[in-house]
Length: 257
Ligand SMILES: [Zn+2]
Image 1 (cartoon, rainbow, N blue to C red):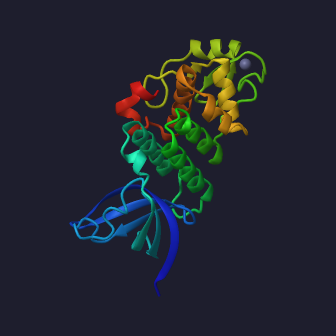
Image 2 (cartoon, helix red, strand yellow):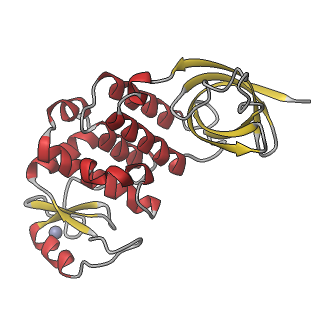
């Protein structure tokens, strides 16, 4: 007997399956990451065509298969048109989808990630604030159990003069430990990138606020070089877990981080 289920989802990516079908990868509210076949989606007349594009927020019915589910009905909740029509917002939105695709487990309910993704895409629709994507990366790391340590130095536990960040240990460094770590800093996992970075006290405050209870304050007040510092840190922190650069950001890196 076939099992059907109803859920809400954000489409993360799609790829071809045969002549007319596509596999749609989605972050759902109740079933974690789901891979489902959308039959006939590549036909011009398909009712699914415009509804199951990456970034679409949809309500759907699926038949649960052994490996791949099958989409049977789709209704659009929001297609985030403003994000699609603005290059800067689109890059950030696609980067968030890419990172969620990496972290979310298939068929493992993860409503926190879904809720946070919808919240971030909604915020990006209202305003292209520079810290929406970086804050999303940091919050996602925390939600998945990889929260950076920001209350003291990750090496010696000092609480004063926190002036750097170690990407491998995912935590702040005091002045003395930053000097020690950066002296041996040359190559890490996926290329010749430094494993530490200096950080201003303003950036430390913003990262602490994002990971604590000051997200709204951080999103409102961060601009310019301070926002760039936090964006660099958050992107590198998430890339450490990806084991590679965020591909969606690769062609605009000089603009974003
Ligand atoms: Zn230290």
